[in-house]
Length: 108
View 1 (cartoon, one colour):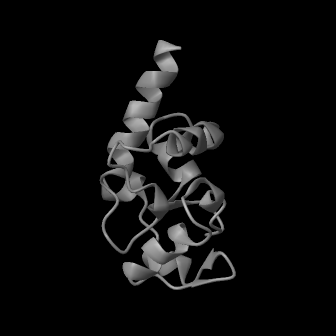
View 2 (cartoon, rainbow, N blue to C red):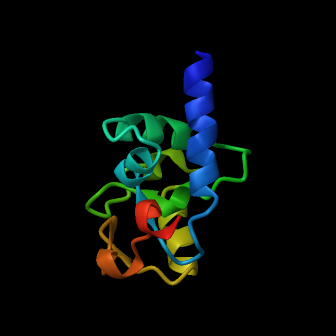
């Protein structure tokens, strides 16, 4: 169990670096951490990030879909947080994903 906790902590460190008004994907974080096949683990980390000051709303699936939105309080909180940062969301999908996408492999 200790290893997964360390992995979660590394995920949180990367997630905290995502700039305001940008998003990344579960897979991009996993790849950056050298665990390319662990996108689902990144998702679990985001689900467990409550109270850890992690901008989990900035992490979406590879197509820009808000797959984690049901883990936020209220029906549209994830979308509202993204929109408050200037990101356009239509039908649970980020618009112009390539424009707002932040790739930790390139940025860090």
